[in-house]
Image (cartoon, rainbow, N blue to C red; front, side, top):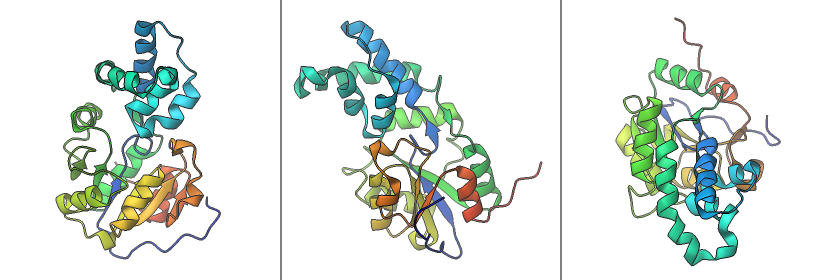
Length: 231
């Protein structure tokens, strides 16, 4: 599960905040599909899926760089609006929660805890995607990359989510698949969990200083001692 001893979880937990892409949702297939379509429009061969999947947590520019890096940053910037348009059109078609996430969220809710989302994704995409997945009425807070003037790794979005969800940071967790998630969560005073099932941006989650590193949502449920939800 982890190469280092996990820190004890806080007592009297109130809730859990999550990163979105790569933590709750496997959205890389749709992000890649939009890139493939844009490559066809631009007359270039699309890159392989694997290197694109690795960088999707860094946003549209990182994805586009996989195919158009040789054009330079200025030209790449000009491709962003069309990419986002293509992505929004296919968004949700192949995106799905990672295995075990649905069960984890149900257990959190059954425990009476609140959960929310803190993502660097733009709000117009975040809100649309969360709605398409069916979580809009369930998440106690959704903070996007442009909700505030700053985004992760700044702790402000995490603190705002805590405020919206009525969570005490000292009794809450932040879960993510990127070093920036761990930095933001720790700076905000939450217990941090790095998850190895996500995109990782090419990094090793054991090196991020997280309070715990877990391989599956089921391990997170076990860490929190969440009971199965009975029908």
